[in-house]
Image 1 (tube, protein in one colour):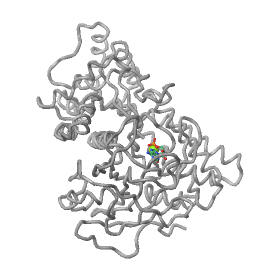
Image 2 (cartoon, helix red, strand yellow):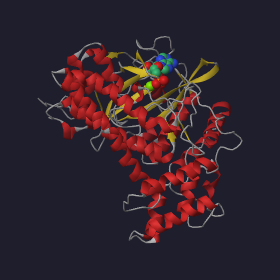
Image 3 (tube, helix red, strand yellow):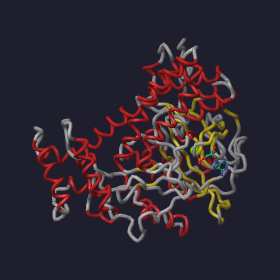
Image 4 (tube, helix red, strand yellow):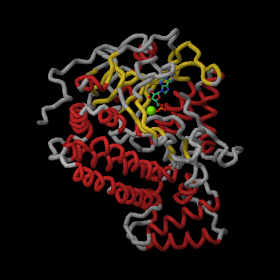
Length: 495
Ligand code: AMP
Ligand code: MG
């Protein structure tokens, strides 16, 4: 049954730019996509290009950086067969048909190490899925996605990447006129929970089955050939999401719009819209201007991930068992496993942040006590953990509650065999010194979009590329977003 639906039969040779595009997705049932070309723009200009990523992809970065027309969709790279993917999604809990309304997949780049990665243009013009949208993207939000996705990658968190941003020479309307831009996004794939919801909503069991097989082969090859492929995929997706959300929680990342169309089956973080990093620790933190009820608040992210996975389970239900009752029982058992898996990943992540190599029963309590103190003090999440791992002591030991916690922590550290040096090294590898602070991101975007000055963003990208390293030159990036009262910073979808 598992004849490969993905790998090519004839090896291709990359041309001078290094493109090595394949199109396994277009062998899936036609209800899952529409072929169409990007819409050319007036005057493509390169704004930022990711040379390191280009190299990993086997692309000739220096040559391609001189080809803004390719990253604007005005010229197609060698071997491209553009398409827009169809998908549905639960947005803020409500089901809708969606699809790539402003994005086009050029193909899958097969890298020198044999990875298969989607190359997608975002902001590349209208598609049959655009509904009332213009198919375009503004420069600010595309640069924002570039900065934050690359920061996430450097933090070691699975994520889509950003290869390039070009401006289009066209203005687009977003409450005011803004420069148009196209982002080139690189992803393990763009298969979303919503892709399965699309096939299920159309009652197309064959498409659903093909999509399951394809996703297993592409992302979970070890599970190919499982007795119940739908269940194998559900379990695999649950495992990866539990790990991913735990990583988000451990760095204070708030996605902001965890709709089911923004959850990737690859387990990568995808769709950087109103996302932001938390400064002061508070589980209720929300930045997105449209998230009025805090559905996607920091502290809700694990539950929401589970809710989204339950929508995946519903979509897969017809493949889980011929008997509906038994199908539901299998789905429920899988979904219930999310919470313990998440908790276990979270606990491991938090132990590492506190320099704990061993496991003790009281660890959860130790961590919760620190977090409760941080919430009461409105302590900065990143800096508090970073200070715990710093060589020089800048801890607020004059605070009695903190001092009591600190004594317990030191006692706990004393009950493991690792030396102080080992503990510190471990902590420094798990507590970033720098994250994309909201005001630093805004400063870089303003310099780029309003004054055409890209140097501020380049410096920010350099610092964020090395988040676990703190040198003196980086210290200005560690200040919490001051001047903004808590809750005052707002992010927008930019759509
Ligand atoms: P997002 O909020 O970016 O996850 O997008 C949700 C849906 O809206 C997706 O189907 C997008 O393709 C679509 N969309 C967002 N912005 C636009 C736009 N400017 N034009 C057309 N479709 C859009
Ligand atoms: Mg989206």
